[in-house]
Image 1 (tube, one colour):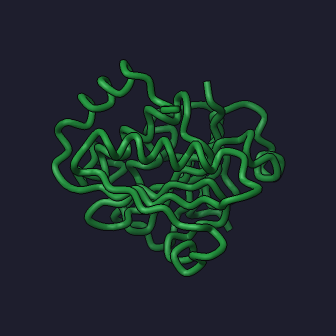
Image 2 (image 1 turned 120 degrees about the vertical axis):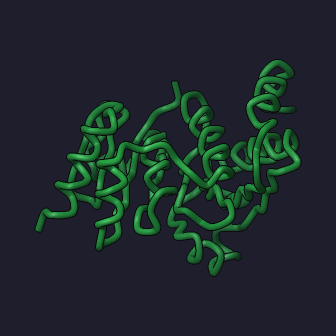
Image 3 (image 1 turned 180 degrees about the vertical axis):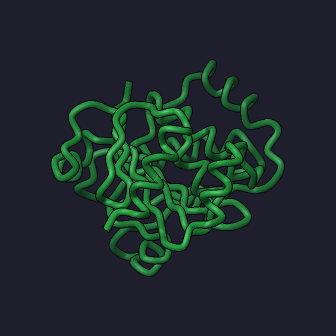
Length: 66
Length: 141
């Protein structure tokens, strides 16, 4: 999974795969309706299995967002 | 009763045949009140049986709190896939279906300790100044 690869490439990145059905409170917290849904630093969301360039855009959003 | 059938075990063994260095699966479970804890532990042990490079350590989420804190585990079942260092690769919930392939992939990648990413991504990661936490929500398919 791309997110895990990012975690391996950087000491600052951690990546979780979360099984939505077992953690309904988290699915609710992040409004997970369709999967996969990626949540970056609590604030930025990405629907679907995004290719690397698209995920990179989200990562940039998450790190410049206030 | 094994979770992986004979065919799957053969395939997984082949996939893991070329691991370059050791990988540890740190599994966090609890005796009671955890829906898939036992299966997650069993699955991890069955995978570890298929490769000399893979070891499993099973921790109790409540009794082994320092370990849980060390690995940043806040919910269970959980698997931390650890290689030469802890890269922050985690699985929460039983890794079945699509997650199972991702688990195998992460074992291989953690073992190799290197990844294939776009130059732009690597440049971004190099310039990163703050922690990034990515949570990918999935369902077993």
